[in-house]
Image (tube, rainbow, N blue to C red):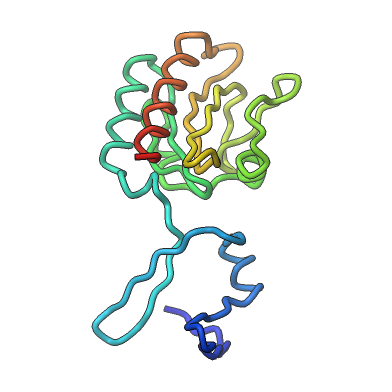
Length: 177
C-alpha cells in the first residue's frame, strides 16, 4: 500500500471525501460504486466495484464458448479492463486496461462507430475490425463484449454479431437480477 500524505476528516454523516487527484488517477467517476473492505489491522480499503468481475468464472466460460463457437478472439470488458479473453492472441488482452478510446466509447455509449472506425480495446491492440455490444445494468453501460478480427484475413460477420448480442443479453439479464 502506498501513502499519499493526504488526510481527510469524517463529517457528521460519516462521509469522507476522496480527493479529486486520486479519483482522476484511479478513474473513479461521480456516482460510481465502490466496494468497501476491512482487514485485521483496522484498515479500510476502497475498491472500484465491477459487477462483471463478480461473476468472473461464468464470464471466462462464456468468453471461451463464444471464441470456440466462432473461432475468433472474444473479449468481455468492464469499464476499465478486459475481464475475460479467449481465442487467438487472448493472452495479449486478458486483464489489460482498456485504451482511452475504448473507455470514452463506453462512457459516451458510442456502440455504432462512424465509417467503420476501429477503436482499439487495449493500448497494444493491433486488430482492425470488431463487433462491440454493450452490457448494461439498469440501462447504464457497465461493460461490453466484442469479437476482434482483421479486415482482410479474419473478417467479422453476422454469426459473430449474433453470438456477441446473445452473450451481452445474457450478461445484462444476469446483472439486472
